[in-house]
Amino acid sequence: MNSKAWRSVASAATRLRNKRILPMKHMIRFSWLTLVFAALIPNAVANETFKFDVSHSTIGFRVHQFLGTTTGKFSRFSGNIDIDRAHPEHSSVSARIQVSSIDTGIKKRDDHLRSAEFFNVTKYPEITFKSRSVKQTGPQSGDILGDLIMHGVTKPITLHVKLLSPMRDEASMQRSRWEVTTDSLKRRDFGLMFGSATEAVSGIGQEVAIRIEIEAVRS
Image 1 (cartoon, rainbow, N blue to C red):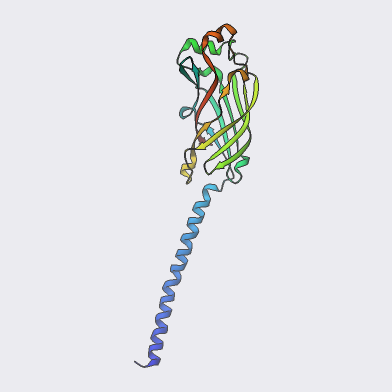
Image 2 (cartoon, rainbow, N blue to C red; image 1 turned 30 degrees about the vertical axis):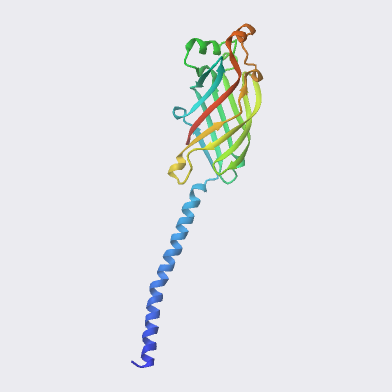
């Protein structure tokens, strides 16, 4: 085969190869765009609201009494988590707890805690929390500064929150689970003191540790 014929064959082969490669380049580019948009879609909604799922959440507490520890929880509460993914610092949290739902496992003690000598649920039926600022401290964690109102007393507290259910796609974003901790609360700061005679014999500590896990559903 002469040189001219070889050049013709080579030219034809090049055209054929280009026809095959060009669609492949488009396919690769399209695949990368798909991955990029798939990654961005979960964050596309600027604001999302999650409501507490009470049946899968716990708002509990722990306090020392004599040499042991007394634990309890509240069984009726509600709350919202408003998330701004583009600007996490603009997110907010609010919660309401029905004090009469206190449960330490002993009815007589619970009735006493509900009475005018302690929580006085007739006068102060709710404990509320409303955030004032949110600071992201890590990829899945943050600090929420807000006002806690209990027994008619308002105090600033900081909630340390951690997302336990990373949101990777649209399906996993329908539910979220959060672990919440805070510094121990002091009973006397909220006027939660028994009468002097009862305080003297109760053996109940001043510091109350809070134990919270919230599962929330996207609304």
